[in-house]
Amino acid sequence: MSDEQPGKRTGVCTALHALGHEYDHYDPQFALDPHADYAALRTTCPVARTENYGGFYVMTKFDDIAAVLHNAQTFSSWPADTPPTPGHTRALIPLEVDAPEHRRYRTIVDPLFRPKAIEHIAESVREYAIQLVDTMLDKREFDFMAEFAQPFPSAVFLRLVGLDFSVQQRDQLCSWASTILHTTTTGASHGDVEAQTAARLGAGKALNDFLRALLDERLKNPGDDIISYLTTAEMPGQRKLDYREILNFAYVLVLAGLDTVTTAIGFSFLHLARRPDLQDRLAANPALIPAAVEELLRYEPIVHASRTVTEPAVINGVQLQPGDRVVVPLASAHRDEDAYPQADQILLDRPAKQSMVFGAGSHRCLGSHLARLELTIAFEEILRRIPRFSLPENARLAAYGGQTRSLAVLPFRTWRD
View 1: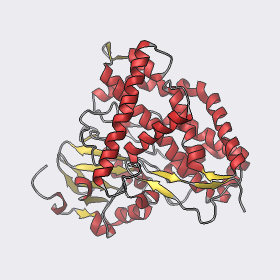
View 2: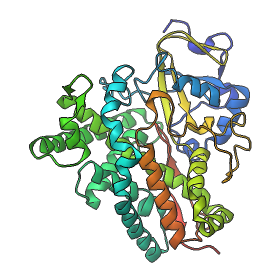
View 3: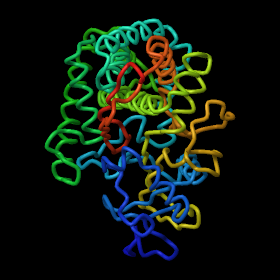
View 4: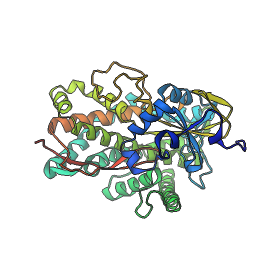
C-alpha cells in the first residue's frame, strides 16, 4: 500500500463521519442489530473507510459486494478475517486459497456435500431434532441457543467428521470455535485487543491439537467419515493431500460446521418468536417452510467476509490499491432496497431472486445443501410440536460479532399469551 493515508484519499468518505462512530463488527451491540448502521452507510457512504483494526473499507451495496465476491483475481480471500489473527501464516483450505489451487481443493470435497450425498442422513438428523424438541417441551422456558440452536447442527456435523457424540466433547469444540470466530472467552472483553488475540490464539492451538490427534487416529484406523476420506483423497493430477493439508481442511470444516447453522437457526427463531402471524402461517401450512428458510436467511445473513485487494480497482467510484482490505457484510447486501424491494420486511411469498446468503463466486459455501437440510428439519419439527412460542417478557438478548454474527443467548418459551 502507498504511504498516502488511505482515509485521506480524494472522494473517500468515512464510517466515522457517516455514522458518528467507528465501524466495529466485533462490538456485541452492533452484532445484535447492525441494520440501522448499514442503511445509513448504503445511503450516504456505500464504500466507507474505517481506521479500526488496521484500516479497511466496508462495502454495503448488493451489487458492489457481488462484484467483489465474483472477482477472486482482484480480491484475494487471504486472509479471511479482519483483523487477521497474529501468527496465522498458512492459508486455510479451501477458505483462504485463491484460484487455481482453490478449484483443485474444492474438487475433492464438493461431492461430499451435494444433495444426493447428504440425503442419507436426513432421518438421523430428524430423530435428533425430535429429541431436542422433547427436551424443550419438558423445560417450557429456556435459552434456545443452548437447548437447540447449538446442539442440533453441532451433533450432526460431529458425526459427519467421525466423532463419537458426547455432550462434553461437543461443548468443548463449540467453545473453541466460538472463541476463534467471535472472541467469546471469559476475560477477553470487547475492546481488550491483547486479551482477545490471546484467546483466539489459544483456542486455535487447542482445536489444532485436538484435530491432529484425531487425524493420527484416522490414519491408523480409517472409517467412513470425512476425515478418513481426506486421508485417501487425491488432487486432480493424482497427488494425495499431505498431512498439513488434511489438518487444515479439517480445521475449516469443523469451524464452519459448528458455527454457521447455529447462528442461522438462532436469528431465524428470534424473528419468528416476534411474529405470531408467521408462526401461525407456517404451522398451518408446512409447505411454506422452504420459502421461510430462504427468506429468513436473506433477512438476517450472518457472514462478514474479508478480501485483500491485489491490483488497482474502482468500486462505486472509490479507488482501491493493492494491499487494501475490504469487508463485504452479507447482512447489508440483502437489506439493500435496490436489490430487494421492502427489504426490511419478512415476506414468505417474496419472488425468487439469486441471493448471496451462502456467498458467491468460487467461494460459495460448501455446506449450503447441508445447512438447508438442517434448517428445514428444524423448522418442521419445532413448528409441528410447538406451533405457538414467544420470547419471555423483558427478555435480554446478547450477541457476538466477528467473522460471523451470532446470538449468545435467546430466551424462549414454548407458549404464547
